[in-house]
Structure formats: structure tokens, C-alpha cells
Length: 102
Image (cartoon, rainbow, N blue to C red):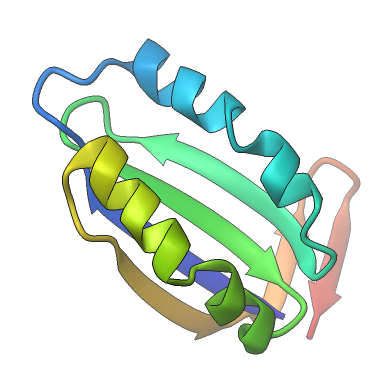
């Protein structure tokens, strides 16, 4: 399991409502990614948006964030995204009481 952390600056004055509205425009796209387990949309309330993705494999993560996707981020937010990849070794899920090791 791969955790991908994507972060990018948003334009000054961007509001939470604007970040949510933008996220809604890409929900269907992410639902169509067969190797994506989960995606979290985050906003620091001021200057940065983040996406936390859990993927079955790194290759799918890399492919999903291709040049077309990067250009969309730049065109929409005026910034270049930074991407990190991490091996997920365990998830504690308090919603169902599970602990899963990978």
C-alpha cells in the first residue's frame, strides 16, 4: 500500500468553499481510478491544499499525476505540486476497530 501526499499552494484569498467546489469537479475522475483505495482532500484554511491518497501500487499513483494533471493544478491554482510517496506499513481504523498491516 502506497501513501501519496500531494501539496500545492493556492491563490491568496482562496476559501474553503472554493477548495470544496474544486474538489467536487474531480470526484468522478478519482472514483474511476481502479488502484486508488482512498483519497482525502485537505486545506490548511489559508495557503495550501493537500491530497492524501492510498494506492495499491506506486505505478498507479505516478500515472495518475501525469503532466496533464500537473498542468491543471498550475492553471487552476498557479502553483506546481510537490509529491511524496511512502510505504504504508499499518493502518489503525477506529471506525471499524481494525488494524491492518501491509
